[in-house]
Structure formats: structure tokens, C-alpha cells
Image (cartoon, rainbow, N blue to C red; front, side, top):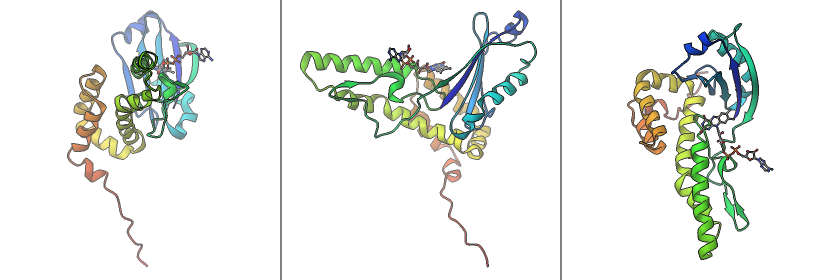
Length: 225
Ligand SMILES: Cc1cc2nc3c(=O)[nH]c(=O)nc-3n(C[C@H](O)[C@H](O)[C@H](O)COP(=O)(O)OP(=O)(O)OC[C@H]3O[C@@H](n4cnc5c(N)ncnc54)[C@H](O)[C@@H]3O)c2cc1C
């Protein structure tokens, strides 16, 4: 999932226009989102997308900035492309007898937002426990693989299903967000605050009235002769 990030130097009046707000704008690009928020002396903006849209990040970011009134007055100080290694899969292996991997290397980043600091710290913490057990008690290093599959992977796999619905099925997700956007948004924030898990958010979204109907398998109807 590539992300294009820009740092913008803007006049103080423009900077204060964005003070105290963080924008996450879905729908700016199919399969992803754009962000815009102030840092101490400049603005940070960016865009990321899954799939084919990833080739169109730059024109979409410039268009997004223009829509936020950041065209002529903006000095783009730096613009950089970063890979976000978002590839959760049950068959991933995180350790063997020779070593273990942590952080972005595991592919365990949040598939909805591309954020990975929380999971990077969590995997590092689990790695430290696994190493301690290995060095002190001779437990196999490969146990780390099982610990990650229990502690982090289920969360990321559930989040990945939600991301696939959000980005891959815009008709369904637009319909659901129009109806339940406030509630889903509040629960998503609770996930970030650590008060809810992605597994609980997933169960909530699937329990919403009409959702199972929208996701039902559609049988092809035979064409009339
Ligand atoms: C534009 C952008 C914005 C992001 N914003 C957020 C955010 O708001 N919140 C969030 O949670 N996540 C965010 N992320 C994701 C987050 O940055 C990563 O998930 C997180 O930094 C992963 O930590 P890490 O330690 O695994 O890897 P990194 O932070 O990438 O650290 C790896 C380090 O290893 C070094 N290194 C690489 N190769 C070698 C080598 N051969 N020898 C020695 N050193 C080496 C690198 O220089 C680097 O310092 C963002 C990512 C991008 C690209």
C-alpha cells in the first residue's frame, strides 16, 4: 500500500485555519484516503491507496490540496513516496530457529489506515518476551510465531476484511456509512483508544441491519433467449 507524504510550508494565517483539526478524507481516492493536519510550523498532508489507484497518488494529492484552498499559497517543502507493507496472511511466518521479525517487517499494520506504530511496539514487546524465554529457559524461538498469531494477527485479519469492504465495495460501504457512519466512526475511534478491538468492531458492523443482505452472494440469472 504506497503512501505519498508531503510537508507544506504555508503562511501563518493558513496554518491557523487548520489548527486543532485532523482530516481523514475517504472518497478522495478510490481504495484509500487522504489526510491533512497541522504540525508545529507546517502542514502534513498525504494520500494512500490500495490496488491500481496507487499509480494516481500525485495528481489526486494535488487535487485534494487545491480543494482545501492550498494551491497558490502552498510551498511543498518535500514530497516522498513510502511503501506501507500491509500484507496480513494466515500463512505468514514470523520466526524460525534462526531469528524473528518485528514491526513493519511482519506486514502487520492497520489495513484500514496504514498505521503501524502500535503493532510495531506490540510485536517488539512480544519479541522481547520470546527472546527472554529462549535465552533463560531454552524455549524455541519459533514460539514467537505462535504468540504473534494469537496476540496480533486475528486483529489485523479482521481489520483487513473491514478494509476490503470499505475500499473494495464502495456501493455497500457508502450505503452503510450514510446510515450508520456516526456509530461506526465512534466505534472506530474506540479501537484507536484501546477501548474496543477490531474483532468487536467487525462483529458490530456485521450485525447491522441490512448488512448481511447487502453482502449476500448473488446468483447469476440466466439470460432470456
Ligand atoms: C508517510 C507515513 C506516515 C505514517 N504515519 C503513521 C501514523 O500516523 N501512525 C502510525 O501508527 N503509523 C504511521 N506510519 C507507519 C509507521 O511509520 C510504521 O508502521 C512504523 O514506523 C514501523 O516501525 P518499524 O520499527 O517496523 O520500522 P521503521 O520505523 O521503518 O524502522 C526501521 C529502521 O531500520 C532502519 N534500517 C533499514 N534497513 C537497515 C539496515 N540494512 N541496516 C540498519 N538499519 C536499517 C531504517 O533506516 C529505519 O530507521 C506511517 C508511515 C508512513 C510511510
